Length: 250
Image (cartoon, rainbow, N blue to C red; front, side, top):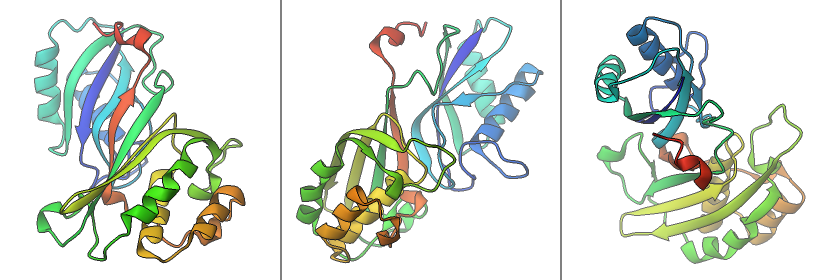
């Protein structure tokens, strides 16, 4: 049977989601907890791959096991007791065998948090920036990022041939003490959100102009990216699945 886990985690002390040899990762800790509790080797498949130091408010992963879980609350309690304090499973549900945590998802939303002033309570939870940003200059360029585009200039080099992503929505909101970027797309490339936030922040600081921004989009001149937002401000906040799949969760 296939089960879907909904979890959240603070990624500060982990080298991303994907399991890596001799390095602490979210997937590694989750697989270890499942293996200990069920007393058999189990492997999870996540809805995406977060980078080192990135957090998740809502993250989904599925795993297969040949037993029927009759008391999910007991499972939750025991798994959370095994897991490190930075990782919490919120729900566990049975799903159909053709459900896939990664490939069944149609969009993902990331939030990026910038704190305007030094705040010790947000260490490793936000990008702390004392310089003021011109939010109006940033907002003017957001429509240029919407739609299906080649985002290779905004991504770490990957062994893939297709760098096209479809950004459905990108928003920046300024509050008294913080700024939040919200980006929703069908998929994301490695370091894509952090690169986009870094470039938009550079626009807001006046370090690069609109022409440089357009060169990134049109000419794919990656060398013009001088600033990549640090990982600690990035949160995966939402994963969307098709409506016809929502009722497969029992």
